[in-house]
Length: 415
Ligand code: HAM
Image (cartoon, rainbow, N blue to C red; front, side, top):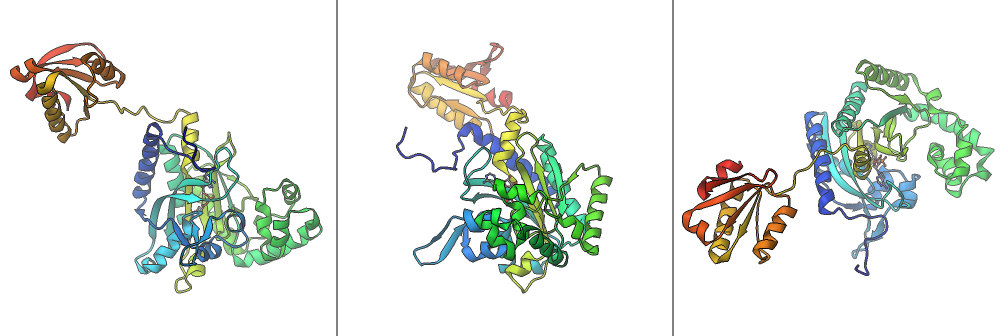
């Protein structure tokens, strides 16, 4: 084993695993495309200020989890902890918000958070994300949740949907005051981070993972009791749409999410066995303006954690069987046989057939063993005799059946 190992919280994706990744990512892209989303790609790192402003300076992500460093030009750089802030930056920089709205995008990225590694929690992880820009109506929140649900169903899993509304600036003023009143008598018993949050952003306290803080927050007032009329209507309308379309959900008045940009709708799809969120998101009507005040465009989106999805799919046997075996193995004997094996495999591969031949210089017996081990569907042997006559024995490796066939006709049999 090499003395240098993968950094803590990272993981390697080996060839047997990567086929599962391709499967999940392909389905995600197909489903998102069906809803009109186009792919967007952006840098792995950004100026630190983007995340401080976008994700929020009182969040755990910004306060404790970002990979931030000064580059050789002394600029503060951060490896992206998520995709939404970057997508907003790209759209404002390239004036995509001036296009006809809605603008619908998807991305497939790695993200980085300095978290305590544990089951389903990594320091480098992968997200498939979707963002909509433009629509303010609750029908768009419904469409986004429908997309998420559609995607999870296509993957063969059905985690439970939790929703909440965390209101707008107006309703939050009153709510923040109530929270401050509630927490002020208990603040001595809370963690240092929460103490700093009391004044700046008391709602963040509700997201604290410290057991002492959780005990206190469990009795805190909930935002749903403080929604303004517009936010209430928006939320009621979303629930009506979900019910009408048979999308099961449970309201969780304590769901506030770990990022500061959300307004109104927030949601999470949680795996019931592990309690982990596999896909989560919400509406963020002020984020675009916060990042570039030239634009005032509502937004909403979600991101799905691919590691978590794959682990659940493995546990519930939701992956199909992937056939990665060769269609044909060409065993060869002698120089002429070997030449013909190279020529024939080149010709068959150009027609899209997966063929293997011996490049290890194995003995005839060892080639047979290898063909068997590689699970090849068919086998032929080419030696001087076959080259001269142009006729080979094609063996079906499963049934053991053999047939004599002209070399030039193999292709039509394999396609
Ligand atoms: P998030 O809840 O921080 O939201 O992350 C979304 C998903 O990424 C989580 O539900 C989880 O599946 C996965 N995830 C997060 N952290 C880790 C980790 N350390 N290890 C493994 N998986 C993880 C966002 O990132 C928002 N940008 C989502 C969004 C998009 N909201 C609006 N648009």
